[in-house]
Length: 288
Ligand SMILES: NC(=O)c1ccc[n+]([C@@H]2O[C@H](COP(=O)([O-])OP(=O)(O)OC[C@H]3O[C@@H](n4cnc5c(N)ncnc54)[C@H](O)[C@@H]3O)[C@@H](O)[C@H]2O)c1
Image (cartoon, rainbow, N blue to C red; front, side):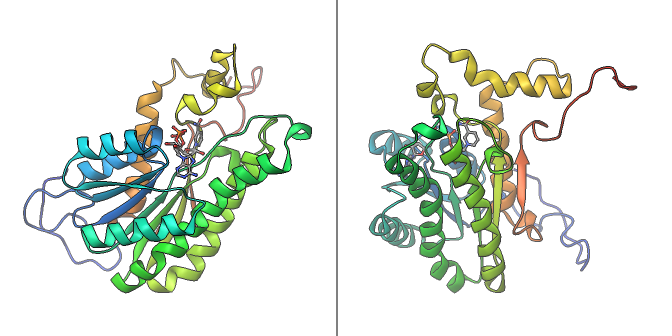
C-alpha cells in the first residue's frame, strides 16, 4: 500500500504519484481470475492481489484447499472449480466472477503440470496432457475473458511460463514445449488484443513450488534444489533466498503486470530467475 500524493499530469512520465485520496491498493477496484490458485505460486498471487485491493476468483481442481484459501482471504474472494482444459468450466468461472464482482479485469494463467521424463519414454497421452493443461488452458482462458475485458475497455492477462520456455533442458521435452508455446500465445494475443487495451505478458520464473518436481525425483529430494545451486555458481551468490520469498517475487511481478503501473508493458517476457539464464561465470578470466 502506498501513501497518496498529488499526481502531475505529464504526458511522457505519466502519473508520477497516486491520485490524492485515501491510502490505495495497487489493484483497487479490479477483478481477477487466478488459475491453479489452491497452492504454490497461484495461492501466493491470489493472496497478494487481495492484499492490494483486488477481488479474486480462485480456480483450481483442488476444491477443498481452494475453498479454504478463499475463506481465509475473506469476502473479496471466491473459489470456483476449474479444470483449465474444459471450456464449460471456463464459462462457469467467468459467469460466477461477473455475477459476484461485476466483470473481469485481470486473468492470471498460472495452472500447470510438470512431466520430467526421458524423451523416448514420453507417450502420446502424457505429452498431450501437458500441452492441454499448460498451453490449451491459457488459450481457452484468454478466449473466455476477452469479451468482458473488451466491454470494460481493457484488461491485463498474465501468463505464468517458465525459464524452461526460454531455454532447453533434458527431461522436459513436453513441459518446455508447452512453456515455449505459452510465450508464443502471449505475443500473438498481445498483438491481436492490444487494440482493445488488453495487455498480455508472460512471467518466466525459474522456481515455483518444489512439490511440483518432487514426485519425479524419488530418493533425490536434493535435486529440487539444483537450480538454486546453479544460480549460486553463476552469481557467486551466498545462500539462495528461501523458496517462499521467491514465490513472492513471482507474485510481485504478476502484481506489477496486472496493475496500471505497467501500462506500456505488453507482449513481453518478464524473467524472475535470480540470474539463471544470464550466462556463466568463467573462472580464470580477468575479473573472476
Ligand atoms: N515449480 C517450479 O519449479 C516452477 C518453475 C517455473 C515455473 N513454474 C510455473 O509456475 C506455475 C505455478 O506452479 P507451482 O510451482 O505453484 O506448482 P503447483 O503444483 O504448486 O501449482 C499448480 C496448481 O495448478 C493446479 N492445476 C493442475 N492442473 C490443473 C487443471 N487442469 N486445471 C486447473 N488447475 C490445475 C494444481 O492443482 C495446483 O494447485 C506453473 O505455471 C508452473 O509451470 C513452476
